[in-house]
Image (cartoon, rainbow, N blue to C red; front, side, top):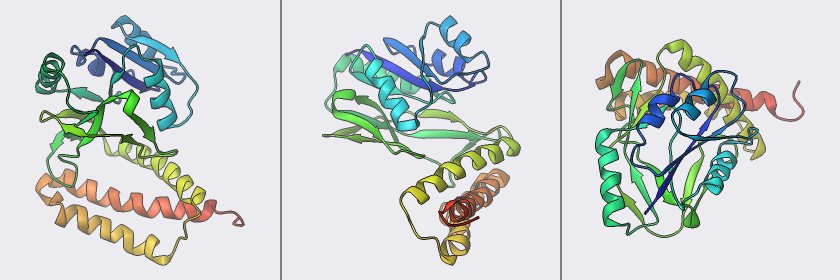
Length: 249
């Protein structure tokens, strides 16, 4: 079993070295970059990754294209702000040694937010399918929140994929603005109606669900920030979509 790791990037000089250095268990590292203006490409190439430039075509398209360029059928897809834990690396080594019984594997993802590992707020275990056979799986989702569709059985790995999210609230707000625009474009594309329920009740429900039902209060001030900004995300994506609809000024 040989594995190609794929990473899609744009201006990720802060993260890319950590991601690549965690991938000692793979047989190839492929970085598909979308015109970075920082040192992302230089750092990736220096660390032994094969780097290909491709204009941005959306998350799913970019990840599927990266998988198509890989040398091996088994793909380990991670984002630039993610890294394999040592235990996950060891688990993948063991999988390569023993062979696979499934077409894809999920792994729990543990996020660091404002310098703290988040164990509640609906953020953990946050299982993701990231290791897969490209002959039996493909990425779907045109705008945001892309996901992997897999034919056949999916197995589970136990060790964690580490996710290094926002270091500051300012960074979170910039990310939130970008993703709410993408989510709004998806709503408009799907011609989904927007009502008072979406603009008022959904944000408050998101806060209540995250902070109380998902026990975000156990994550301290960081959990409170996650809950509030989750509510803001819900409001902004529907508010933006409302003003993007045809016929509005």
